[in-house]
Image (cartoon, rainbow, N blue to C red; front, side):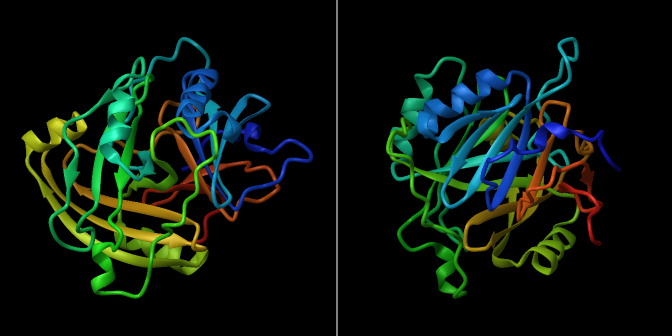
Length: 288
């Protein structure tokens, strides 16, 4: 399945291409770009044609592109729908960061700060929040020694560095980009085989309906298989295979929540965005 070619993904002449790029469709590029500038710092933000660009260390670019013209009204996809992407910001003090977000116009912090008591993400603390246009983001705080260090020598990238003018208290950088996938095993296999990804941890999570409502504003329950991989010791990817009914398919890049993951971002225009059978949206053609 392919979306309509989108030449707005091509970098302007003379623009340095990032190591990896995460493109996300938003209803108002100016609003979304200004919102991320309020978190990551004005110096991280640039405008390239009709897109907004936010840069994170080391060499990660979040690119915001417009959805279809006014008249197409969308609600954001659910976190558990196939292909849904979320961006997670790593912070040093999650209470301070969440308190700051609660004061920003249009932002909704969901549920409680959760501390993981055991397993490979033991000591990890997280909470989700809605942006002014409704898309879910996450805050995450890692302990000094992550739980997965008990069982593997592999490490996620924990060396994020914020911009000097970052405005979100204790921001360290982009912790990961997360995706809901159709097949966790197939997604991991593709990333390891074709993009030099290394598997750092895998786990399974169960949540009842009350927890999902409180933490994600979702009226579902079920189990989820999760893996985290790292690409080039630079970009962490969090992958979930959710065992819930009624998952919607991936959205094209001209609809709210549509997204494109470009690993080893090429200076050539990304002429297609292809939904893979396992649930990620990657530049086509995709090697199976």
